[in-house]
Image (cartoon, rainbow, N blue to C red):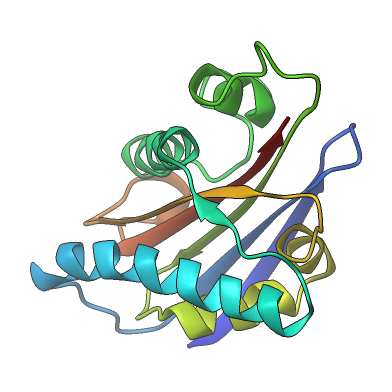
Length: 179
């Protein structure tokens, strides 16, 4: 798997919102890739929490609302051919996440997001290696304050737009804390 490009965005609230694109020549998808994406979500969470534990950080708890936000965004990007933290309608990522994982009733509410897409095979170890090699991604993974995470890995066959008609895997992780 070769790294083709890395994009990093930063939210005005100083939360890192990195994205990564990975392309591999000659990648083909099979029907079993869709099932593998579900396993990939679990493996990403396990790998990410392993990294956090080795650095003395609390493991993140899987959150249904954050996972719904992540999945909605992964699917929208794959369907409409864009790759960005901003939603398809141009709204900021945190507004999208807020629809699923709201701040109402909490004094503190923060969210962050990592994105990655690959046209080749992608493992959780590979995804975490790429993210840890990028300052913004690494910051999100190692932010002490995060308590919850949503993970989405979707396979899109012949994805339009920025994906150039390739079969791709799109991974979104949405981080959150509210108290």
